[in-house]
Image (tube, rainbow, N blue to C red; front, side, top):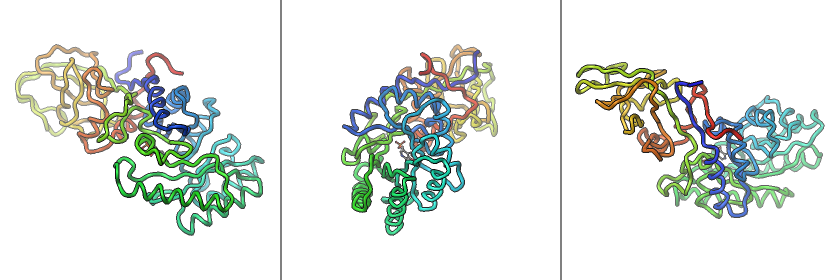
Length: 374
Ligand SMILES: Cc1ncc(COP(=O)(O)O)c(C=O)c1O
């Protein structure tokens, strides 16, 4: 069936990108971060592609995402990074999902869940080394380590890992980077002195995995680089290949006279008689409305700027006198091979990051896997 728009995901590119990351990771294992629908690429398919490429762990933000991976038959080690009170931790334990624990209340909930499940829970302690988001620091870290080791002694919990997260790894030389590596090293040493025997210590996101050998530890957790988008634009592309190409077929093509106001608010007027094409995706599909009169797309072999406002379901491009017909394909962004913009270019034009461009492409846009899924 023909669809008005689709996000084509090159699973081979995901495998290639994991290969690039593994080469940078030295001997460290790779946890592919597949949270938020694998940054919009499709949770299960992207996870399979990352594993085929050599990732040996999966990382998600929410427990529900991990359970979907289990439902799909993926039994690989999977870490949930964000827990809130009252989630079904018993199911997490029963299904062998690793949980990140940055607070004693969560540890206590998981211990109770492990008791009920009659099975040991695997946890990773989260150290706040300077991001001031999740995790424990100072006296809170000491208390968390102490409580976790006591729980481990009862046999309900295995303290399998210790982790943290960088605030500024995408800004090479930022003083917080060395400070966070130093704090992590000290916090890990404190826990090990107290008796912790970690299987994996991890702090590196994509930027750190690609640029900071001292931050690799036992495992790296790349997200954006898995999908082929550079985490540090100032340092280039690292040989990564963008996996997502967003395409739409023109819904309608028509000639309009000079001086026609286009779309809501008439923020664009045709300069002369011209051909307009209606592209059937809008902000309801995740196309940023701030992209009105700003973002470029590839239509009829040439770049064209979106003409007028992006609407909920559609936007317009002005093709001048070039031949174009309803049903002809427009490439919104992709790897750039055919002259189309990249997600990075869209992000830079809007003052945001490529993460947001690919992740926000909505559920109404089907994901397609040319060459088949894995
Ligand atoms: C805990 C954690 N680890 C790793 C990542 C991956 O980050 P990136 O996409 O920058 O590689 C994220 C994403 O924000 C995260 O929250």
